[in-house]
Length: 134
Ligand code: CO
Image 1 (spheres, rainbow, N blue to C red):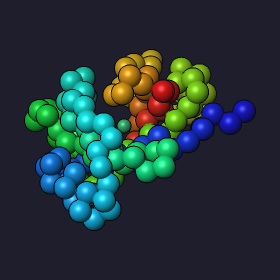
Image 2 (image 1 turned 30 degrees about the vertical axis):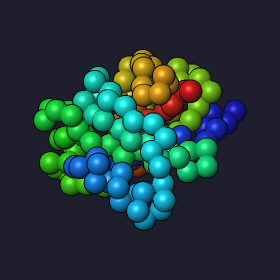
Image 3 (image 1 turned 120 degrees about the horizontal axis):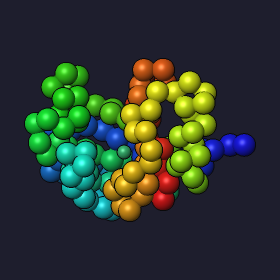
């Protein structure tokens, strides 16, 4: 059975969220579809819609957040890919059974009222993966 239904979002870590939003507006004519602070993750996100998917511009809201540590270590750039799935718990279990290393042991709330779980890049060909159930 195919679990992936769509690319939900491509997340890009940025230092200055307003500057990134302005760049996407000026360069692509893109407007922000949704903007939200996610306290759990220590981030503020601005979502630019592309067809049925999003570019998720992501900035840190505190120095100890994972995105802040990523920016310190690697600089700005591609942070993770969010895959849309119908059932986050089922997809997580399938990935773990296939050898993936979970970051989240169980699905949890994400932005936009979604349910999400992250998979560690180690063992997933170097890409941080987020499973997103809308
Ligand atoms: Co995400």
